[in-house]
Length: 214
Image (cartoon, rainbow, N blue to C red; front, side, top):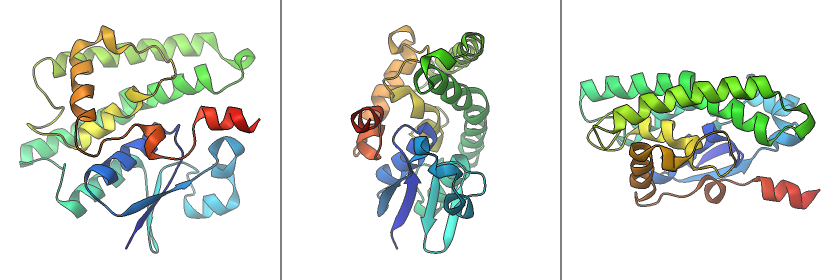
């Protein structure tokens, strides 16, 4: 049965799942959610996911939400990218929890405030605070990747797909790949994996589409 991923291109959390679906070879199709048009807050979407968030992965009547949990489900389902040893699987869990708390959450907030709010409503102090948190997290990831090729194992795992997701987006949020050479090399290794695609090529919806529609 084909998976349906309810998503939109600007969503880094959706990209984590879309990338896993693509690289693991699942049969899937994206279903665009008009997040900026308020669809995620609509009664129909809330009936699908009461949390009002993307991504939502659907297979028949089965509905899965929260990107970290969905990644583990897909790793178990496919037997791929979940870690090659029990110790590696523990590391996968550790880094996905870190990413969702320390990294992606900060990047997603900062990127939204800097790019998707009207300029007059962008809170400078909040942006500066989140950029400081992002920088601190980048220092942790940079030091970790300076000693190894992949985040949690000797091969790519869902921990890599989780941690990398926001770092391919072009919108500014205080991250410059050139400043972080180990992260830069790691991102290049991921994008060299067979089947990799940029988030705006993998999922429908991007800022250019919305600008053209206005």
